[in-house]
Image (tube, rainbow, N blue to C red; front, side, top):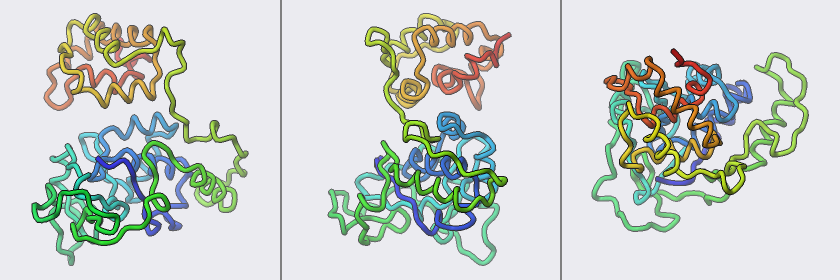
Length: 302
């Protein structure tokens, strides 16, 4: 999967976008950074929580037409194909195939099949890169557009794209400057006090600040789960939960005692254990990590 994401000015440099609260704008960028190569985000609520945004910001993005939510909890960036062009050797199809099957593409915009424009002919979403497209590493001016798969030149990555591992400080400052100049949509709030980079609403993610002896690995968490949560399916293949584990280690910053508390609460919760074999959303190790904050706060206590 590509490690860089781009955002089209035709999408974000509009009054419609800039009139949204800054938190909603911030969440849009974070969703775009974490989306897969087809623009799907499997855990939008988790991303909203870890970026100090909320469900209201997700609703605003959906209402304004910047994301399409699904009953499964997945969302897709509506203008993904206007924002991003991927090389054929880096494209990986989304795992959200059921959600993808419900969409059409009109003018490089995802459209729900039930809400198609009457005079437009939807374009089927390709499932993979056609065999006729070269799979070798192309030159910079031989990029493949992820929508049409035609070769066309691309601009310098360093100038127009955002590295997935960091968001340019200047882009955050530009949003804050816009807020101080134009307060439309913010309820008449006063100009926000300028903060240092490590105090902005875009948190700086780093390794947990535990003493070296207390730092946990993915294997430590799995072993702890297998020892405590004996009612739940045992985790034998750690790679199956690599995303959930990396997110938990990066964002939650729990200590070993915190994980023990979470797993003990899950093991003692009759509500969660009743959903172990649920067909739509079975509760397993990955689910527990994704909902660790709610479990830790007692949302599923008996």
